[in-house]
Length: 303
Image 1 (cartoon, helix red, strand yellow):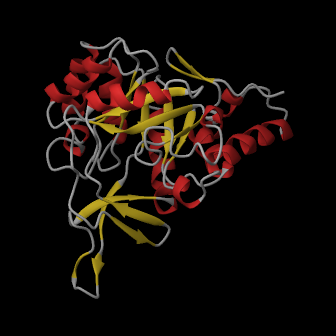
Image 2 (cartoon, helix red, strand yellow; image 1 turned 135 degrees about the horizontal axis):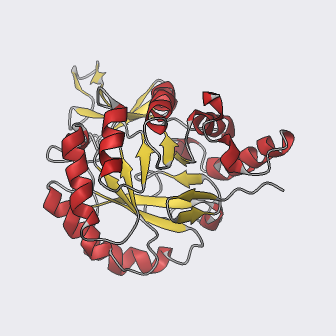
């Protein structure tokens, strides 16, 4: 029997397979396909302090092996999340990890403080890497000092473990990883989407209403694996790897690169059952190689 449990700091997950913020709603949308309790964790849709309407349409554009999105953090705000969604998702049988965002450091702190102590929340994912908002977002994750300051301030207002989501749109991912670790991040998640754009040749105009958006899907996987490899060897805290995971083979590759857990995003849209298939595939892979504990996979490619 394979032990699939993994730890992200003090947080223990039943298995290493999670689903990414922005691709799984607040945790209920896939319940018609399978029991969400099978997952290691659910990273919820991004939450800001006040409701956001998001960016103007079109917000999605299909590309070869991926999609561009510019949703712009549309969400009902933290108060509505706590009152309307959290009571429904906290009994799903898996870890619920709200993704939090802000236009200012103060807004990150407001959201984190509002969620602190709420029953059913296992940790917070601090999104300093969204490329689709004009204020904040990726700007916080592009500079090590700025990223570290967000973590430092949020740590002051919450007792929840902090998983900091890093941007790939940087020169040195290891420097940002080290900076947020030094300020108390309990774990990292990476990568968020790559900044991109497309032009509709029928209209001869940018395809997205926001002009630029975040590229995700299989096209970004080699970049994501490279960054997980670099970041995981630069820090001691655990990493949740993501970016183009569409099969159990992809997930194993991320763990061999240094990830302790993996997160499935765009793959959920193409194959709603993919997360369950990945859990089963990882377990089967370990059995075939007499690996008793899934944690043995983390960083094996380094040796």
